Length: 170
Image (cartoon, rainbow, N blue to C red):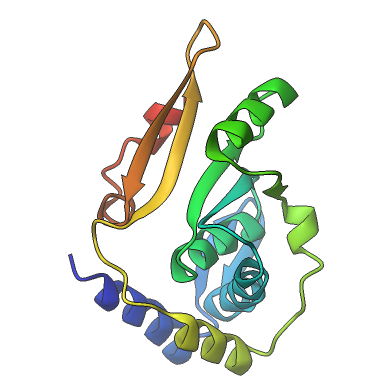
């Protein structure tokens, strides 16, 4: 799989079809242009995060989708935190991943807003040469006894959609 082809397709869709809907959540439609306007400021925020990983609360929000893309484009490994986990489980995952806190939709909603053109430039200029075997996420899950397990997810697995993420996370 050619990951640079995926990234170029993403940017070309935004440039050539900014008003096409790319995400539908309930009654909310998110266009390509609006999505990149969320991705770029999150990339800026992730630039200031020390370390190679970032935890993200997996809320049903455009900010969650944008943060996943921003993490990949910014070469940060994503650690998903599920909404249905209790505080003890969240702390266990953060401790195991060596992280202090996690991004939430509410926090990301305050990030600096950019024009579509500035956002495209930010994403395009921030892209790195991603490789298929690069680990984009560490997935954690709890079994019936509360024991934690983890699985790493490569970029190729993430882009293929053949990764059993839902199965692993439960």
